[in-house]
Image (cartoon, rainbow, N blue to C red):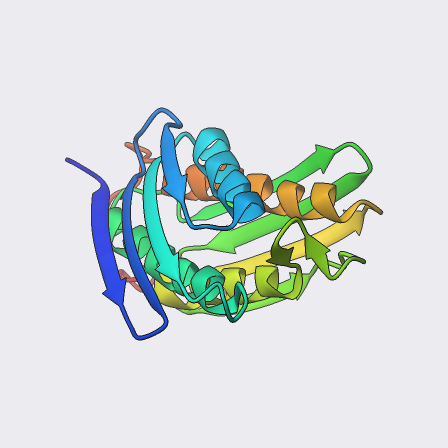
Length: 195
């Protein structure tokens, strides 16, 4: 069974086309017009072993907010579509990931109930061209569009680049864990019988 999704979203602010394969090898082809954001999405693909293609054309003459947020919406929708009926998947994933001075925890639940708990504290306004406040908007958009509980917590760190990169990589590893299939799981991993 193919666990892939291709999603397009076109508004007056952004035009985004994204393809996600949950059972990939970590290949990526990402072009958002925001160098550091491209780097984060490439890291997400590589460390989650997802194949990811992103083409985003946004109103970067305004700022990076719409492009980052809308890419999060499209990625979240792709995750939701690619996991399908969630039968046989682990559902939960968690990772504590170090990157030099930074240590970030990510825990998530593909529960069908959206929620974001975000406790990252980058101390710079920008990393490259990316406004650091948009990182929260990205993960908020992903969590709600994917209908997942998503917790990100910075345990330590002083370098904003490292903190944000650790968060994207931890998210990738946790999502990879949550989407793994287990032959012991009959139906969905819930006492309710549905997610």
